[in-house]
Length: 151
Image (tube, rainbow, N blue to C red; front, top):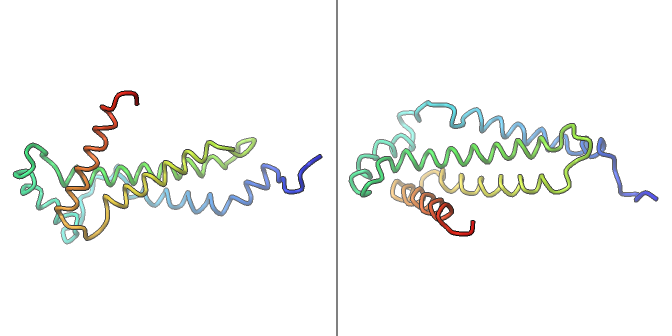
Protein backbone atom coordinates (compact mmCIF):
# COMPACT_ATOMS: atom_id res chain seq x y z
CA UNK A 1 0.00 0.00 0.00
CA UNK A 2 1.36 3.40 -0.96
CA UNK A 3 1.49 6.36 1.42
CA UNK A 4 -0.71 9.20 0.14
CA UNK A 5 2.15 11.64 0.78
CA UNK A 6 4.57 9.85 -1.55
CA UNK A 7 5.61 11.57 -4.72
CA UNK A 8 7.52 10.22 -7.66
CA UNK A 9 11.12 11.14 -8.30
CA UNK A 10 9.98 13.21 -11.28
CA UNK A 11 7.42 15.11 -9.18
CA UNK A 12 10.08 15.83 -6.59
CA UNK A 13 12.51 17.10 -9.26
CA UNK A 14 9.79 19.36 -10.65
CA UNK A 15 9.08 20.70 -7.16
CA UNK A 16 12.81 21.29 -6.57
CA UNK A 17 13.40 22.91 -9.99
CA UNK A 18 13.04 26.56 -8.86
CA UNK A 19 15.44 25.96 -5.96
CA UNK A 20 17.91 24.16 -8.20
CA UNK A 21 17.76 27.04 -10.71
CA UNK A 22 18.34 29.65 -8.00
CA UNK A 23 21.26 27.74 -6.47
CA UNK A 24 22.83 27.15 -9.87
CA UNK A 25 22.53 30.86 -10.70
CA UNK A 26 24.15 31.75 -7.37
CA UNK A 27 27.04 29.36 -7.99
CA UNK A 28 27.56 30.72 -11.51
CA UNK A 29 27.63 34.30 -10.22
CA UNK A 30 30.28 33.47 -7.64
CA UNK A 31 32.30 31.41 -10.10
CA UNK A 32 32.26 34.35 -12.55
CA UNK A 33 34.28 36.36 -10.00
CA UNK A 34 36.10 33.36 -8.54
CA UNK A 35 39.78 32.56 -8.07
CA UNK A 36 40.36 31.74 -11.71
CA UNK A 37 40.31 35.47 -12.45
CA UNK A 38 43.58 37.22 -11.88
CA UNK A 39 42.25 40.76 -11.95
CA UNK A 40 43.31 43.02 -9.12
CA UNK A 41 40.71 44.99 -7.18
CA UNK A 42 39.92 48.45 -8.50
CA UNK A 43 42.32 51.20 -7.48
CA UNK A 44 39.76 52.90 -5.21
CA UNK A 45 38.55 49.74 -3.48
CA UNK A 46 38.99 48.75 0.14
CA UNK A 47 40.73 45.56 -1.00
CA UNK A 48 43.35 47.56 -2.90
CA UNK A 49 43.97 49.79 0.12
CA UNK A 50 44.55 46.62 2.14
CA UNK A 51 47.04 45.34 -0.42
CA UNK A 52 48.81 48.72 -0.39
CA UNK A 53 49.31 48.29 3.38
CA UNK A 54 50.86 44.84 2.98
CA UNK A 55 54.46 46.08 3.39
CA UNK A 56 53.54 47.44 6.82
CA UNK A 57 52.26 44.02 7.88
CA UNK A 58 55.23 42.23 6.38
CA UNK A 59 57.53 44.30 8.58
CA UNK A 60 55.50 43.51 11.73
CA UNK A 61 54.48 39.93 11.09
CA UNK A 62 57.70 38.12 11.85
CA UNK A 63 57.74 36.08 8.70
CA UNK A 64 54.27 36.20 7.17
CA UNK A 65 55.28 37.68 3.83
CA UNK A 66 51.87 38.26 2.28
CA UNK A 67 49.37 38.70 5.11
CA UNK A 68 46.83 40.74 3.15
CA UNK A 69 47.19 38.84 -0.11
CA UNK A 70 46.90 35.51 1.68
CA UNK A 71 43.87 36.59 3.71
CA UNK A 72 42.11 37.85 0.59
CA UNK A 73 42.99 34.58 -1.14
CA UNK A 74 41.56 32.58 1.78
CA UNK A 75 38.32 34.55 1.51
CA UNK A 76 38.14 34.13 -2.26
CA UNK A 77 38.92 30.40 -2.18
CA UNK A 78 36.46 29.73 0.64
CA UNK A 79 33.74 31.55 -1.28
CA UNK A 80 34.65 29.48 -4.34
CA UNK A 81 34.39 26.28 -2.28
CA UNK A 82 30.97 27.32 -0.98
CA UNK A 83 29.76 28.01 -4.53
CA UNK A 84 31.13 24.69 -5.73
CA UNK A 85 29.24 22.85 -2.97
CA UNK A 86 26.06 24.78 -3.77
CA UNK A 87 26.40 23.79 -7.42
CA UNK A 88 27.02 20.15 -6.48
CA UNK A 89 24.03 20.25 -4.10
CA UNK A 90 21.80 21.50 -6.92
CA UNK A 91 23.17 18.86 -9.30
CA UNK A 92 22.14 16.04 -6.98
CA UNK A 93 18.54 16.80 -7.86
CA UNK A 94 19.17 16.52 -11.58
CA UNK A 95 18.40 13.50 -13.68
CA UNK A 96 19.28 10.73 -11.24
CA UNK A 97 16.89 7.80 -11.05
CA UNK A 98 15.95 8.77 -7.53
CA UNK A 99 16.65 11.91 -5.51
CA UNK A 100 19.30 11.73 -2.79
CA UNK A 101 18.29 10.69 0.67
CA UNK A 102 21.28 11.93 2.70
CA UNK A 103 24.18 12.82 0.41
CA UNK A 104 22.91 16.29 -0.39
CA UNK A 105 22.88 17.15 3.32
CA UNK A 106 26.66 16.80 3.51
CA UNK A 107 26.98 19.21 0.60
CA UNK A 108 24.53 21.63 2.22
CA UNK A 109 26.43 21.61 5.51
CA UNK A 110 29.75 22.12 3.76
CA UNK A 111 28.33 24.98 1.68
CA UNK A 112 26.91 26.66 4.79
CA UNK A 113 30.13 26.29 6.78
CA UNK A 114 32.24 27.63 3.92
CA UNK A 115 29.80 30.49 3.38
CA UNK A 116 30.09 31.57 7.00
CA UNK A 117 33.90 31.56 6.86
CA UNK A 118 33.91 33.38 3.50
CA UNK A 119 31.54 36.01 4.86
CA UNK A 120 33.71 36.49 7.94
CA UNK A 121 36.94 36.74 5.94
CA UNK A 122 35.45 39.03 3.30
CA UNK A 123 33.37 41.27 5.56
CA UNK A 124 33.58 44.84 4.29
CA UNK A 125 34.83 47.58 6.56
CA UNK A 126 36.53 45.51 9.26
CA UNK A 127 39.83 47.35 9.00
CA UNK A 128 43.27 46.15 8.07
CA UNK A 129 44.30 44.84 11.47
CA UNK A 130 41.09 42.87 11.91
CA UNK A 131 41.37 41.43 8.39
CA UNK A 132 44.89 40.16 9.10
CA UNK A 133 43.79 38.73 12.46
CA UNK A 134 41.03 36.82 10.70
CA UNK A 135 43.49 35.51 8.13
CA UNK A 136 45.83 34.43 10.91
CA UNK A 137 42.94 32.62 12.62
CA UNK A 138 42.41 30.64 9.43
CA UNK A 139 46.13 29.81 9.19
CA UNK A 140 46.17 28.59 12.80
CA UNK A 141 42.89 26.68 12.51
CA UNK A 142 44.04 24.91 9.36
CA UNK A 143 47.46 24.14 10.86
CA UNK A 144 45.74 22.54 13.85
CA UNK A 145 43.55 20.46 11.53
CA UNK A 146 46.66 19.17 9.78
CA UNK A 147 48.65 18.40 12.92
CA UNK A 148 45.99 17.06 15.31
CA UNK A 149 46.54 13.30 15.82
CA UNK A 150 43.63 11.02 15.12
CA UNK A 151 42.04 13.14 12.43
